Image (cartoon, rainbow over all chains, first blue to last red; front, side, top):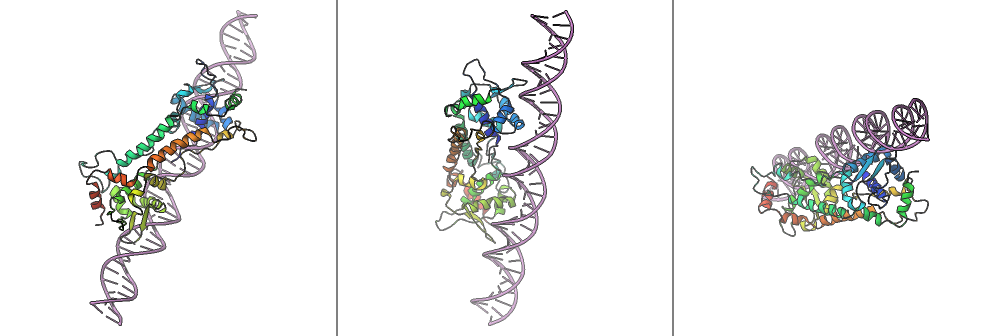
Amino acid sequence: MKLPESTEWVLHAVTALAQLVPGEAGQPGQAVSAGQLAEHYGVPAGYLVKQLQSLVRAGILSAATGPHGGFRLARPAGQVTMLEIVEAVDGMSPFYTCNEIRQRGRGAVPVPPDVCVTTCGIAARMAEAEAAWRQSLSAVTVADIVESLPPGVPERTRQLLSRA
Amino acid sequence: MKLPESTEWVLHAVTALAQLVPGEAGQPGQAVSAGQLAEHYGVPAGYLVKQLQSLVRAGILSAATGPHGGFRLARPAGQVTMLEIVEAVDGMSPFYTCNEIRQRGRGAVPVPPDVCVTTCGIAARMAEAEAAWRQSLSAVTVADIVESLPPGVPERTRQLLSRA
DNA sequence: GTCCCGGTACTCGGATACTCACTGTCCGAGTACGTTCGG
DNA sequence: CCGAACGTACTCGGACAGTGAGTATCCGAGTACCGGGAC
């Protein structure tokens, strides 16, 4: 059970984009191309685009083609949770899927399931743990991450990512 | 991000083994062969052995070869947590591994990392969420699972798994 | 009758192929700017 | 001088190979029971 490496990429990419928002309500934030972000983090550009597309489909980012195009936040950073980002790139299928193996083989309950009719207790516990994980991630927004950065970092990021 | 399907197998297998413990202190519980368990749940026997071996290495089960051999609980069911079982079969490496991509590429901090010297805030949040997941699983023991079964199920399991 | 010995059947344990998601790369579609030509 | 059309450069978007963990299967090593024979 491991999250794909691209999860780290998009989390950092969204954090970087959030540092570019000028704070004005009407201003949607500067657009940065995937090539810029890829060079900034030293990751393959073509693959990063593929991941950022997932965020666009999820409504987290908005993309624009052509010169001066690129990706930008589609919503204020305070309204984007880490859970949304992770689910956008990794899918929102549960870790543990109950295949009801207790209903198969010799242990299967005969014709009408008189016992074991409720949901599997094991699956219920696993679902609870997973809910705790998701709840913890949904409690943190991108704005929280940006605010926790050491002072000076957003300024530096802005400078490095500003289109030359 | 998905747990391997074998996780379900071993969770149910351990639960089944826990239902066989006769409750006596000295009695270590009846041994059941992997073939019995595999037939009980309708899963491939050879592969199930491989997974149960992981539990043996983790000290959760004990194995005995030869006739009347098989697997049995190495500890009382109340001292085996779901987290132990999951970690035994899936490994205990974290979901999210921070590769410090912020330290690579153009965005890398020059020579001595004056800023960003602390651990990555994103990684910290992901670690918190993962800790919540593990904490939730470590709070449930196999004995809890057995107790939550509908009445009559342990008796039925004992009967089906008793060596013919 | 008792003990010892060999055979057999059953079990775990490890080594060997196969499949699919994640990773990485490529080329095509679309857009905004800069240039050029005509009025 | 002003406007419009064209070309170019840059961007995203989707389609095509490579790799590792998980899945599935097989055969070998080891052990306890069962039967037969000798004492």
